[in-house]
Length: 184
Image 1 (spheres, rainbow, N blue to C red):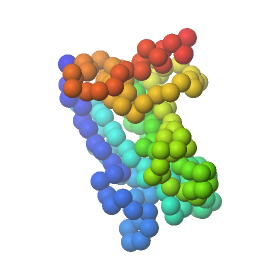
Image 2 (cartoon, rainbow, N blue to C red; image 1 turned 135 degrees about the vertical axis):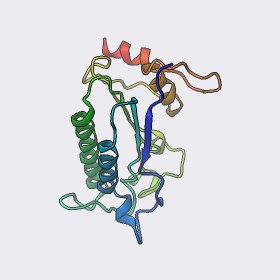
Image 3 (cartoon, rainbow, N blue to C red; image 1 turned 90 degrees about the vertical axis):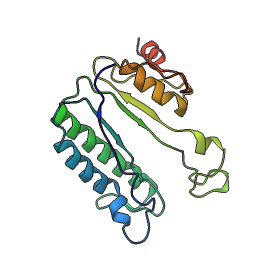
Image 4 (cartoon, one colour; image 1 turned 180 degrees about the vertical axis):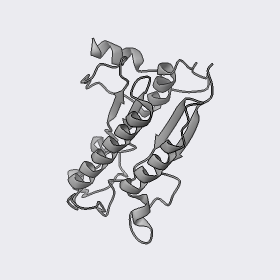
C-alpha cells in the first residue's frame, strides 16, 4: 500500500443548522472558503484526500444573491460551489490522478406524497440520490448510467480506483467494473 493521504474533512463538523445564529457559517460559500484555505496548505508530500459536505440545500432556503431563495436556487448554488471546488483543486493539484465522487445522503419530497419538503420517509423520492464520478483518463466524460447503485458501494469503489485492498469487514462492492462497462 502507498503513502497515507493527507486528509481533511470539511463542512460537517460545525453545527447542523441552516437557521438561527451562525447559519451562514454552514452555507456552501463558507465551506468553500475553508476548503480553499486547506488546499493552500497541501504541499504534495502525501496524496491528498478531501471530504467536503455541503449542508445546502436545506430548509429554510438560505443561499446568497444572485440565487433565488427556492429549492432550485439552493441546488444551483451548490452546483456553483461544487464547480468552484473542482476548479480550485484542478488549479492547485491538476485533474490527472484525481477521483471525484459526488453523492447525497437523501432525496427530497418536493410536494410528493403530501410532504412539502423533508426526508424522513422511505418513498422513492427520498431514497433516490445522485452518484457522480470524475476521474480523467479512467472514467469517460459524459458517461451516464440509470442503474441502481447503493451508498454502501461508494467506499469500495473509491478504494478500487486508488488500488487499495478492500478490508474484509467493509460491506458493499466496487462499481468500477460497472462504470467501465457503461462507458464502453
